[in-house]
Amino acid sequence: MHAGLSTFLAVAERQSFSAAATALGVSRSAVSQAVRALEQSVGTPLLIRTTRSVRLTDAGARLAAAAGPALRQADDALAAVRDGDRAAGTLRLTVPHIAVAPVMVPALRELRSRHPALALEVSVDDRLVDIVADGYDAGIRLGEAIEKYMVGVRVSQPFRFVVLGSPAYFKRRGKPQHPRDLVDHDCIGWRGPTTGILYRWEFERRGRELAIQVPSTIITTDTVLAMSAAADGLGLCYVDELTAAPLLATGKLTIVLDDYLPRVPGFFLYFPERTRTLPKVRSLIDIMRIR
Image (cartoon, rainbow, N blue to C red; front, side, top):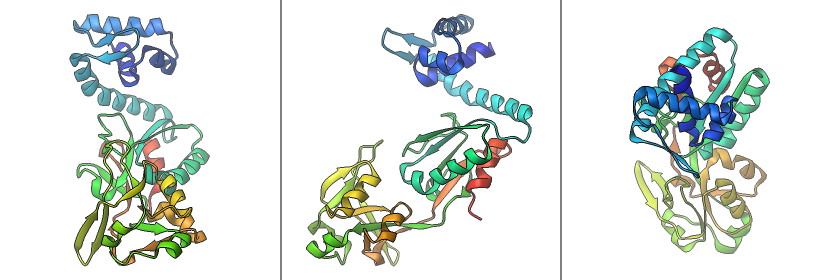
């Protein structure tokens, strides 16, 4: 039953018999036989197969949601016993786009250097992911977005979201003195790649909050593209100060509206308490923790 369940979960996660076969290192027919045997055992179809797609039945979705986290926990426990204190196996992480450059990239280098037996799978996603249900070992999010039942470890200092423009742009258009002045400027908007919502630029001063729907002459889902366009003098952009640091240091971009820029608690690594003792999670904590 365990082998069939593991195979079913591999298919359910990838929505593909072929992809599951590749991941498990077996033939597609072996995957199909294992899933069929499991369906016969439970007495109901778990997957709907067509020539072009695979999707879960209601029963299959319930089984995947209930059994997936438990099976991954069992596999982690077996791996911990087998590998002792050595960080090994696969470490699965979910990370938002804005944490990639300032937080995740440096950690990847060090993890690969210190723990060559550890494989890394990083999903870049701005959704608030349920890491237990979706099978992740840990995630990175802003401190304000972490569920209270999760353990949080600080991996960055607090930082601001900033409005940036190039010297050439300011010479041509002048600098806004108040957030409401942005309606008279060219702005580079950011649309959430997951939600599709155009982000409202947020400001704060003396405890009062203000959100502005800026007029966007350019809209993108990518922060790096927004900063590049701003550095080319095409408009103002609104990004986190950590990601902007290299362009700020070179003088290609300059911060405006300094008195109105909101500060956030910073990025935190979060995970369930029960996974803290796993060597692969401990190795991540040791490398990423801000002391």
